[in-house]
Structure formats: C-alpha cells, structure tokens
Picture 1 (tube, rainbow, N blue to C red):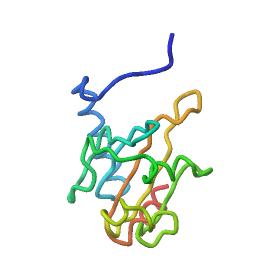
Picture 2 (cartoon, helix red, strand yellow):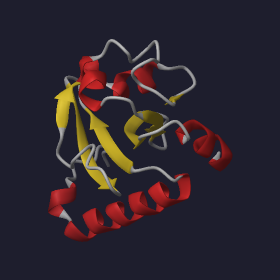
Picture 3 (tube, one colour):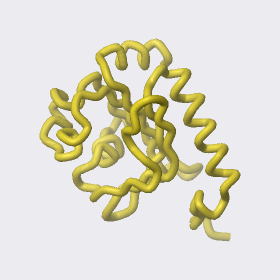
Picture 4 (spheres, rainbow, N blue to C red):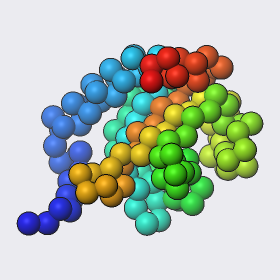
Length: 140
C-alpha cells in the first residue's frame, strides 16, 4: 500500500469545512488574523485551506514559486519553524518579493511532517502589529 495521498480538499467539501474550522480555532487561540495550511511541491507552494479573521491576507488556492516563499525558509530551518514580529525587517525575509506585497506583518511558520518524518505541509499564521510574537510565545 502506498503512503502517497493524492487528495484535494476540493474533492471533499466536508474536509474543507473541517479544516477551516480548525484554522479558525487556531487563529482564535493564538490571537492572529490569518491561519492557513500550504502544500509544497518541487516548484511552488499552494494554500490548501485558510482562515482570515478580519483582513484577507492569503486566500485558498493562492500559489507562488517555491524559491521566494516563507515556506522554503521554514522547511530549510533546522528548528523547523520561523517566528518574527515584522517580516519587513527580519533578515531572512526582508528582501523577498512577497514581503513587499504583504507589508509589515508578524509571522509564525511550522513544518508539518507525516508519520515517516517527511515534510508534508506547512501551517502558517500572519498578524498585523507588533503584539504578535509575544502572544505566540505565550501560547507556546
């Protein structure tokens, strides 16, 4: 039996609803505007499911070239997460094109692995303002 799963949330509307509800709970618990799960391919990162409380930051289906993404930075980080209160001043992200598009945002990215330890997806959270990092650190 193969360990590969070729499922799309669009094929399973109830799974998509469940994912949004879970992301909504995460957003409320961490006190962040947006939470989403993205899937990495060899060439791009695609948002599978997202929740945006007030400001629409990342819509479902958003796809971007992998090399210029926060996803790449999270996955290649030996600690398997990235946390900053301001993407526009953070050394690893301030020069990325996507950072200019997003503006000043706090960010938490976490690598999600499958049972075999392989990178499966990424969970990301965005928040405007500077209270982001302290609220995340309290939640962790």
